Image (cartoon, rainbow over all chains, first blue to last red; front, side, top):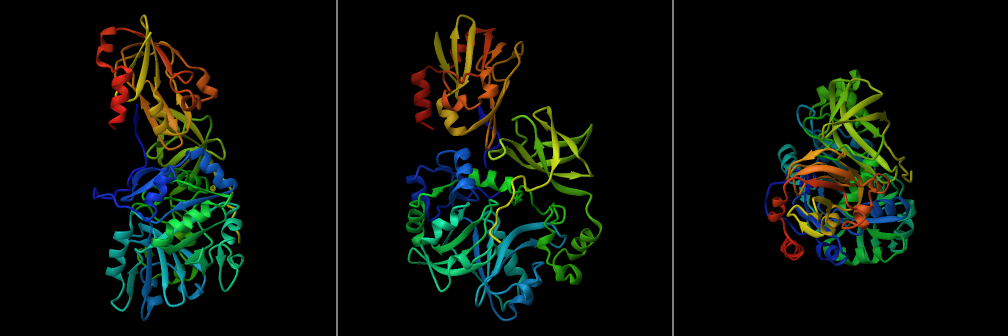
Amino acid sequence: MSDTDLPDDDGAEALETLILPLDAWHRARGGRMVEFAGYWMPVQYEGILAEHLWTRQHAGLFDVSHMGQLLLSGEGLDAAVEAVLPIDLSTLKLGHQRYSLLLDEQGGVLDDLMVSRWPNDLYLVVNGATKWDDIAHLREHLPDEITLNHLEERALLALQGPEAFAALDRHVTGDYPLSSLTFMRFGHFELCGVPAAISRSGYTGEDGFEISIPAEHAAHVAALLCGEPEVKPIGLGARDSLRLEAGLPLYGHDLSPETSPIEAGLVFGINKRRRSEGGFPGAERICREIAEGTPRKWIGLALDGRQAAREGAPVFAENKQVGVVTSGGFSPSLERPIAAAYVTGEHTALEIDVRGKRLPARVVPMPFVPHRYHR
Amino acid sequence: MTRYFTEDHEWIDVDGDTGTVGITDYAQGQLGDITYVDLPAAGTAVKKGDAPCVVDSVKAASDVYAPVSGTVSEANAALEGEPELVNTQPETGGWLFRVTLSDAEELGGLMDKAAYDAFVAGL
């Protein structure tokens, strides 16, 4: 027996595996630790299926402290950042968060990220496996007046699920209530007595929150939240199956410098004013693709039976290969395999080659499981 | 009946020239929730080290290697409806397939339970 596609390290180099603030806490809770993005992280506690379904029904606590938290500040900040990201910062108000993309000069995706406006700064959350490259890219492309502060002393937790609000609200105080946050809004609060920047967002398709706190308080906060009856700790395995059901792309798998955001269906990440004005990396290609469309698109596929198609599986229309699966697995909520693939041309029915066997797959809209954001 | 183990975490119970193959409790624990088992058809000829069977978990697909050479005589039909038997009864009701051995001498290269337990303890 051999594992052929366990979670990989997203291309991180074989340096010494790093320890996150909650490492001992995960181990004490029975988390099975694997290397991911250069860190030891819990892939599961009691099991991916149970953790996945618990998050959809109640609330799950995810440690995402491997992600990069960056603060940008300085004279001319908005103009400088708009030269690097296809974001319209004139419409990003204090307390608002927005999805954006780090693009190369050809419009390929270097990373996807969240940007929020703090009182004096822009706060960015970038992927763990890409954060060092992102920081180098930003330092190179932002003018000297802009200060980039990597908040390495902060942990990041995500509390996700329909009962996340009820559990979190018991521990939050502040100048305004937690209920004042709707999807993609953030605020500064006290959480279990700890200063916390909390946004109403996440990577599961559920209502939920992402919580930035000083690393030294992470174990205290995690223990208090997991003491709530609605909350269990959830590992990376369920994080991946939840985000796939929600149709959310994963950098390094569904997004890369070889894919454009328009192919990936992320046109909303190119803000309206920027589509007409351009002036961001890759603008020529991106604007052309918005106007003309792309021959290749990232699409959802539903398989019959129970055998899953995994990343790398070729996709066929009759005898012609038209694409490749970038994410695939068993959907615990739908109790059937689902996959996402880059496919050229318009199709309704395709076949996926899984270990030499052709499995029929229907083209279905994403998300596979409806989003339940609190708007 | 004698049970042997491989370093790839298969077990095989040998009774005469028939071997029953499964994956160990350690293996199912590593794989996590099993969602599907791709079983070999009866009559499939296998060589020691071939991968006639695939176990799908939520996170990965894993090959199951034939511990010995021979011909598949039967697959565990119960797994078609209940693949989770591989999790709940990995070394009994969650067996995968039976094989008619063509070369019993191959068993000499496998581990007994004590040796396998020591192997796993060292992982």
